Length: 450
Image (cartoon, rainbow, N blue to C red; front, top):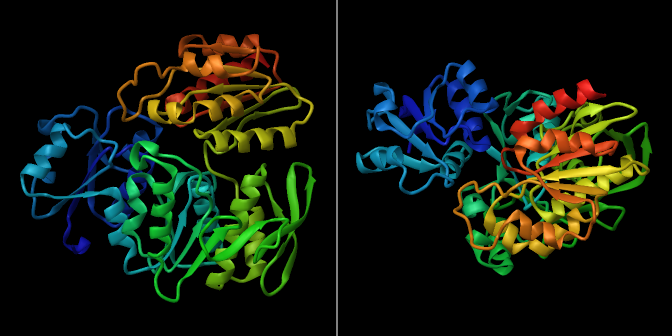
């Protein structure tokens, strides 16, 4: 399919983080762009500000007439859209080009030098670091991010079209549409078992992805993963490894040993060993691409992070409020490690919204264990996303397994009052559902109170 022949692009689920990056891309390439989403959000508001037409009811009659020509319109949908969606079925039944988001990403990147970041955790932060480093080195790239970069206030970095930087998403086996020149795998923890059934099937999918790397391409893997490649790790014997870690005024200072040399006194401002690991692989891929190390060192210290990835909302002597997207037990463990490293003597309250009934069921004991580490836990109801309820799988069940006396089930309506009742000096909101929509109000109320 030749994207040059397409005049209009219509997105079903345009407010999704990956979908909205593609919408921005096509808008920047002078296509007419529009779409549907279930509810207005900050992302849909930003897209509307760019001149993208969006509506919020599943109704064929709400679609602009200019999108109803099957010869010139491409329809992109996310797998999260239900099969009974009337707009999606209208386009399918009337001869339109209808493709998944991952297929479009494959088409856009196939004629570029593609760097792909895979892994069950760390994809978004790693991709945004990689995109930032390479842009600062003037690489002619387009980077599609799974989060809003603090440096660019966007999930799209546009600096040319010769190189592409993308997240290789294992959900729905989407990453098998890519054929990267260079790729990395950050982690392979069990997840998306609603798709894969078991951890072995997930592992097989990552093996299949590793074979998608082009001939003479390069594959990087986190040290210890069961796939061969150029290894990276922290304070170990990897091909690329971080050494001599210090913390100075909340900033990591460290050395990086590469296969050819040692880079000294690098600085990185994001807390947590998991973020150090993300920075290392982004640095390694940039070096192997050919970026000059002095420019990379300078770019690394200017990286600001991704919204909802350990994002400071309030940072004062008496009160710290951090918001994070963590929705898997290992991600919650990483957030906990970062918080304890930065604030070792302060009481921490975690407000968690579980994401998906199936994920809650599949990892119930691991979720309970990871949440039990905090001093206090406030638990919201499960965010269903694309799923229907599963009998017996509730936040009350999860709460019963948390080994911590300071735990409560709370509703969104009482959330702020319960946070204020806590005497914690560090407040965390965690989860991948719509808890992110509560952050502005929580920040406002806490700012007034402090």
